[in-house]
Picture 1: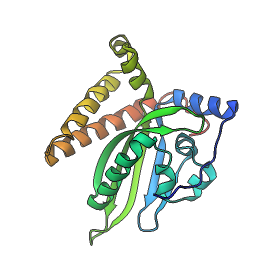
Picture 2 (picture 1 turned 180 degrees about the vertical axis):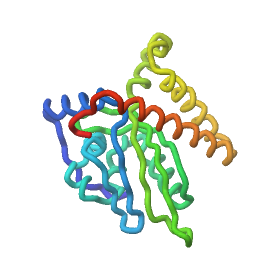
Picture 3 (picture 1 turned 90 degrees about the vertical axis):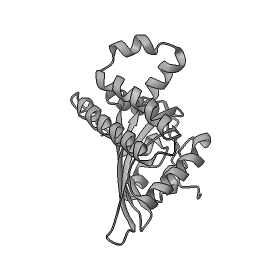
Length: 204
């Protein structure tokens, strides 16, 4: 994997801007990928979460630049999953950690899809990123039961669906895997609609 151009944002201002924007909505942002030209584009929020220069992300760069922002312990697995789905096409739901511009390690759910042309060649990808760090922290702290009662029903459903999806993907059952992926994607889109109702951050 090539090491891409990263922009380091270690100032207090960058940390506050990024965290405030994520707190406003768990939906981080969108990305698009021109497969044939290996050109990935994303908005400023996605760029900062992956510790990529926002100007570079806006104009487009190699997908390797974004993959370099994935946590080292998750990078190889995530890269393999992404490459496999580029070749097979269709929708996916990945969960992995990223090393963000403010120095914080975040858990994200990446819901995406790759479309193929009439000859079966991958041509275009797009997706949405959702921050699930808070849920992971609640699981580690043992406060999940109390926190769950206060969360939106869709968030609780997504939590159980994530656990179901991870388990199903351990089995050699392609149909069940696709069904679990689609369920999580539908829940994610419903959550995105709920999250879009409050006032959005200026970065989005």
